[in-house]
Image 1: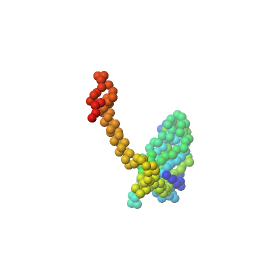
Image 2 (image 1 turned 135 degrees about the vertical axis):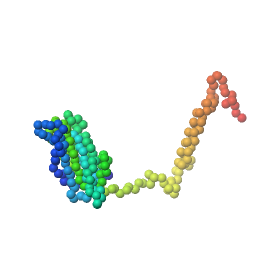
Image 3 (image 1 turned 120 degrees about the vertical axis):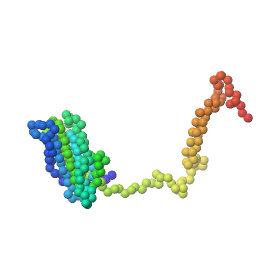
Image 4 (image 1 turned 90 degrees about the horizontal axis):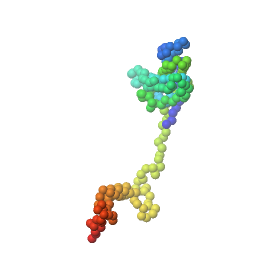
Length: 213
């Protein structure tokens, strides 16, 4: 599926509250980054891509257009997504991250604004943010591909004639196989039929099975 980059304006980072663990630097534990799309009509968000910088958890809210007579509302579509599994190590601290619409908790259609809520509760990392933020919307759909005829069942007039006489008819193979399987099960279930030509448990031949008219 194709995607198209959406031009956006990233506002400055705002500290939302004092950090979970107070430090001498007074570092905030939660930051908010607002993203607007001034030159784009409401669109369906397909993907968010960015480079993490020591952010431990990420939440995303979007403001969506609902109807001409109803004001747009904010909806939480991602809550506390973990970017750093271990706060005492740098795993995931500076990696590129892609988030797709199927990972979100709500429909990503008719998006007007985007709000990223960054959280870092560990006092080990003095600063944190996200960089190189890119937003993508769904591109034009590819035209439907025309599959070759051999991928579908041919109509009777297109069915090829058998190359060699005596080849089995494909339409009858399945039913004949089922009949053979049923016959095999019947023979296996018949206790007496398995004793033909062999000694029975008493060490003598079963004359009834060997007799014929």
